[in-house]
Image (cartoon, rainbow, N blue to C red; front, side):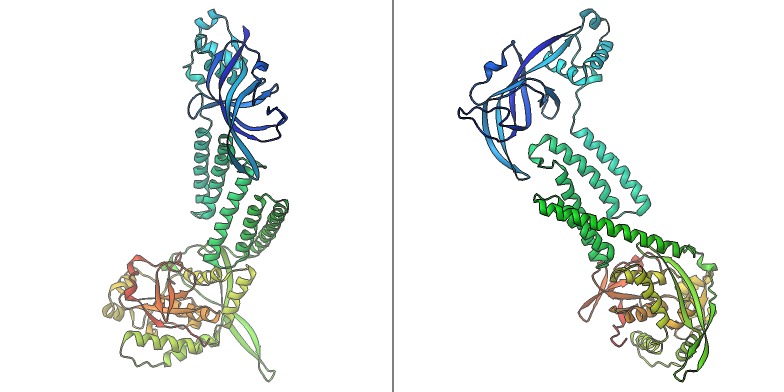
Length: 572
């Protein structure tokens, strides 16, 4: 086994960072910094003195230089050669990358490679073994050079499958995409399909893609390499996510932190030192804020762990028995009066799967007074719309001061978790959605089956829980929060009352066609809505979990059959 020196000539193309020129116009190694040298059309030439080719505009290197020798349009071998000359250099277009001006060039390249010659007998007797041994002894790149530059030697066939040239661009990219899909599937199982489950696989694929592009195309490089493009890309991904949260949830603490992080990443990818320093500061600030937020949430979670997380229950067997909580009330004359509360502990997950826990109390006397006032109410109306509108408005007026403890508890939960306006509304509505359905009607079961039929008869047949002989077929807000029994209009009237008290623009929507009632909320939402007095009120189902503003069941989604049964209350 011996080594043979080969002199190779080909066409060169690439980019260099321009330095100074000598008075004769020749360019030396100290004058140029080559970014890429791509070599094509290689041929073996007779032994030569490379110094004889250093004429005109040339580049001469006597130390390791990295070149890419293309063996097809897309496949190349990346190798370091110890001696090379690029002569007859012709300058092309200029490109600016990351504040640096690069110069395109073309020319003729000559360089030196070494090949290994094995004994012919050994090569003929066992071609596959020889191929493996040669690759192991000389290195894979030397083996490729042997096949590429000495095709007629016949010692190792160039078609050997074991050492077939690989494509250094597509294989890593396909691998990154496969890993990204696996990561997406894993995150989807944990968090569901959302922005974050798409973000991290996208970042992974983008890092690999930008790295490959930076190797193939010199204009992808910059002063800090491809990392600047990666930071910029990730920054804009977080910015899009933050803007999406802002649109859906308003200004929340998390949204603000994501905006700070996005701005920091984008500034860090800029060129100015001061701008990059500000970017580093913003990123560190966002990390500190996120760390504190996670600590606070961990502490809150430990506090909430005192009560078990809400678990779905069988509605047909569900029954609520309120706890009686005794207390005292001091009157204006400084007398002490004993009072009692109907108290309930409620645990639920909102539509973002965040866990909440609250203790809701209604005074027992308010519960009883509210029922008495409802039973005394008389309504004269000629149509269903007017009929229910009068009932709902009178019930709201009667309960105006009865739910102060309820609204205080919702405010406490909102402050404790730093909720934005949209997130707070979702927390309130999802708490009512989580309470199992309880049918309420004004007749006895037998009379309701005969008069109403349809859904009510089927509901009775399946044994669903029901409150019968309730005047108007609706409970007041105080009654519902006292016994947790209510259907569509009972819940909708309660949410109308609570959300109006908390400053939201809300209406009650009803449909005679669907025999159903829901709420409509004005805000920056998307989906189905009903326009009323110039504002869009997005539908919000109150009897089932999982519904968000603008979404409604297909069975009752024709908005022509809905009307506003109770408009926004400006007096609360």
